[in-house]
View 1 (cartoon, one colour):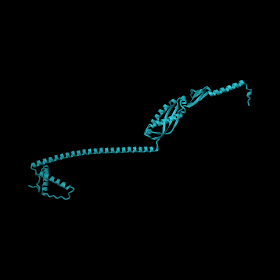
View 2 (spheres, helix red, strand yellow):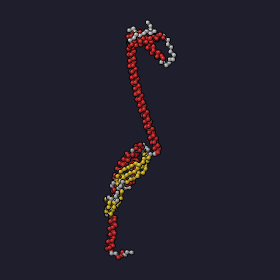
View 3 (cartoon, one colour):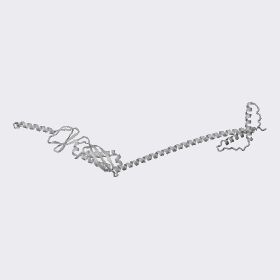
View 4 (cartoon, helix red, strand yellow):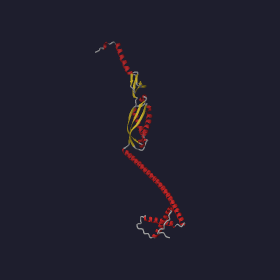
Length: 324
């Protein structure tokens, strides 16, 4: 065991001084990690903020009062019940993203900063969401987040804190309200389907009416064209009949009896053809003189003989049926 009684007093003083110097150096040298800042107090009063790196302070006079995390942090907002403008109760929770900008203000302007930010956020959630209807609450989360961010960031600015984002995670209405909303949504969809179906029937009816209109127009144009053609045919037939009548009149005026016989025989034949082609006629009684018909046919024969006689240059012979 070492015997300290033999140590010279001066040597002991030097050793004690060296030990004290080493202790003072260790107490005065401060290393600040990246992302962190230290506040320094001198005799209980704030004097400076130590940034990341190596720093020297006066031992026993200066001391580090707060070590603050300067990185962005996330704070969970617990669920709470909110009554909306239309008296619907919903359960809401969220998250807050914040960052300390000024270490001194954050250390000395507010006590328990995270607890203060949490309560401030919860209070403003009730204020902002309580001024909205339920439908607006469920459909406009971006608007809610924006309003909350503006209000909370302005309120925390004196604390040296920057609120970067506030997000509403979940909005849960009561079960009976969810069922009512589901029924309302189904009714809206049924209504939309009925409207679309009625619109389809309306369009189909319009298209059908347009088609019938076009069909009637085309049919009318067809009837008009057919009537025009029939009138034109009757006109041509009338012209032909007029010409035949004129020729017959000329022949009668010249005393040609065969022409009259031909005309009458033609009418006989046409009448017989009409009677024979009738559907409701099975038996035909003809109370007419056969000699009249034969005489008419004789007239036809005479016309034929005259025509062939003129063509061949020979004189026609008188038939046994002709009258003198």
